[in-house]
Each structure stands twice: as structure tokens, then as C-alpha cells.
Image 1: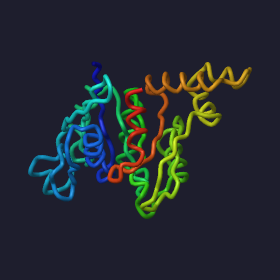
Image 2 (image 1 turned 60 degrees about the vertical axis):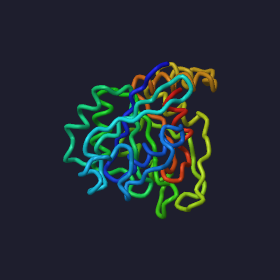
Image 3 (image 1 turned 45 degrees about the vertical axis):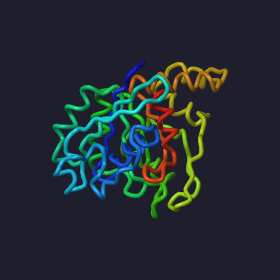
Image 4 (image 1 turned 30 degrees about the vertical axis):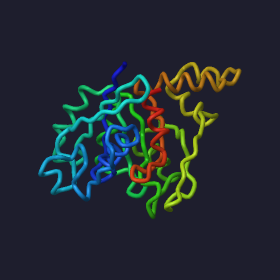
Length: 239
């Protein structure tokens, strides 16, 4: 069985602990969903965490998908605990950078992405809270490309964003993905410039390779509380 150490990183209150709880619950590691508001989550088990509703220490929990054990490192989102985050990054195989579809890219998000890109750590982006009033998807993708990195492509979309009925739909890698990949993958660039156009298999292979070397970032949408989009995120993690 292989093991992946995955960090969940975000600006405070973007939903890191809720996503951890959802992942553990969906894969049978816990028998009920904990909630930050009630202070009964797996990772926020200290007194300070329970009182303030934030993660202070880097906590570890695990679940299994097929032949892969995923160790989740739920890192502090508050800027007061940056040293804990830096230590956690040293042991990670990859990361999930979490954004709120309502609040969007925040100051801490930008700091975290700069650090992740400097370390070339494989990183997936997860846009959380798609079912919250005020959730944005297309405009937020523009913000991600402008404020975090242009080297990103959505592998899911959303219908009914900002409503309780929000649904996640898969978006297989397409021409837009290829164009974005061309900025970091010479093979895809050559195929687009000189032809023939890259096949779906070539685009998928380049996406996997460039994600693995930390130069490109697949983006997923969902709701940690509602569960939408979490299965697609997990597929991206263990692929």
C-alpha cells in the first residue's frame, strides 16, 4: 500500500477542518461528521481550537482509498501560526489549497500559493462553499489566474452556484486545458504550434506530469459540508 501525506491549506475559515471531516467520513474513517461550531472535529481537539474554532497545531488524520493510505495534515490557517505550517510542508507529498467561493482569494491564500510554488509541491486547488449565498465560480477562476497563478485549469464546473441545490459537473481536459498547459509543457506547446493537435490522452498525460512536478494546478469545486465535488477531488489526489 502506498502512502500520501497531503496538507490542506487555506486562509482561516475557508473550510479546512470541514473538508477533513468530510474526507474522513466519506471513506469510513469516522462514523459521524464533526462540526467546527460544536467543537467535536477530529483535528481540532485541543482547548484553544475548540474555543476559537480554528486549527492551531498541524493535526494528522488518515483514510484509505483503494491501495492508497492518505494522511491528512490539517494545517493552521491563521497567520499567527505560520511556523506550524512551514514545518508541515516539509513532510508533504502534495497539498490541497482551499478557497471559499464566497470570500475568494484572500491575503493568506496568496502567501500560501507563493510558498507552494516556490517548493514545487504538487498542489490541487479546491473551491469550497459553492452552495453558499454569494458563491462565485467563473469570476473566482479569473481571480485565481490573476492573483495566484495562471497555470491552472478547472476539471469540474458548477451548476446552481450560490444555492443549496448547487451541483458539481466533471470537465474532462479539453482545448482550454491544453492551452494553459502549453505554458509549462514543451510537448503540448509544440503540438499546438506545429500540429497535429494533442490528443485527449496526451493532454491528460501532460496534466498528470505537470501536476506532479508542481508547475500546474488542477482546480476542483465543491462543498465540504454538503459533500458535492469531494469525490472528484479525491480522484485527483490519488490519480
